[in-house]
Structure formats: structure tokens, C-alpha cells
Image (cartoon, rainbow, N blue to C red; front, side):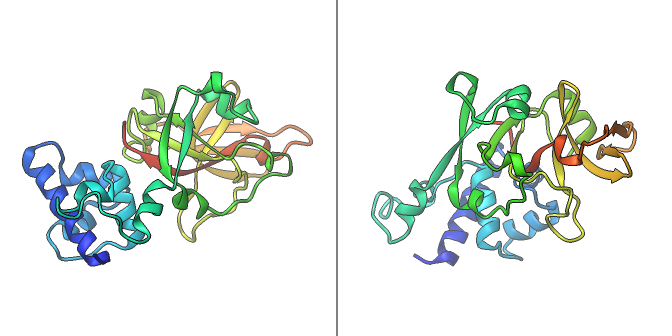
Length: 238
């Protein structure tokens, strides 16, 4: 089996789910973070997904390679696939306060865990503040109604936002694309786009009808004192 074979098997399984009424193309696009047209072209065989894109789609639908293999191949060992399937990291889902304040996440603070392909997490570049380098790196927080209202459709109610706590910089992660951050605002954790103007952090919602919020920096403070981390991945409600 090669990548093209796997690509087609995943496409067929997604079409089956759509036909059964358990999935829609728009829902899949939202879950995997693609434009709806991109997913539509994929489902209609007009455009192929990259390996990273296929990973995102499979992750969003909790699909494994074994689930889409034909019965005669399911359970057989294929070089590289078995190791890849096993290489997952359990990311702790925690409260907002634990995400903001706990250097290492204690077992008592873990609400549950979500499995993420380790390769997807390792590919994230790091830019930690000096005192954050020893913090447990990845945590997940559940998007509540307040965050979802201001950030829809980027963040949906009940989705999991994976926070990379080793990116505390306001430097752009990708050219021409704003970073989405988890920001400390008093006792609250805010999920917003962020700008910096002189001595203020400017928290921007996705929807314009919601207000921009300002956080004034005190003497000796830097933006990194408020940046909990960069949202590196968003998973649909699980």
C-alpha cells in the first residue's frame, strides 16, 4: 500500500460517513481547519491532500490506518505504519487555571487526556520565555461558550485548544498568518489574536461585534508574562 492508496481509502470512508448523515463536508472542514472548498475538492477527487492534510483529516475524525484498511489487510503488519500508529502522546486536558499556573501538570489536575500524534506535536517550533523552558509543554483546554462566541468559527463550543506553552513570543509563527494565543487576563484565560502597542497587549476577537480588550503592562513586565502559549491545534468536540 502506498500513500495514494491510503488517501483514497480515507476519502471513501469519509464519503460513507457523509452518506450515513453522521458528517458533512462543512463540518469536516471546520474540524480539520480547512476551507470548505478545499475539502469539497478532496471529496470529489479534484484535489489531493498532502500527508499533513491527511493526518489532520484523520485526526479530526478519529480515524486510524487500521480502520480504513480492507478486511484482508486489517491487522497485518506494514513497515512504518505500526510504529506510526503507536507513536502518540496523551495530552492532558486541564482547567484554565492549571494551564496558566502549573509548571508541571499533576495527575489530580488532569480532567482527561486526548491522544495526539507525537510527530504532529514535535513539528511545532519553540520560542519559550526564559523561565518557561522547564514547563510541561502541551496542554489542552476546553473552549467554553464565552470563548466560542467571540472566536467562532475559529473556535467552536466544546472544541479542544492545544496550547504550546513553549511559545511565549508575539513573533509570527507563519508568515502572513496571525497567531492564536492563550492569554492570562486577571484570573481568566482568554483565547484571542494578540497585538502589542507600546505598553498594552491588544486582545482581538475574530468577530468584530465583540470588543477588543486591552491589558496594560506594568513596569518591568513583558508580553511573555501574559502569554500562556500559542494555540497550535484545535480539535473538534470529543
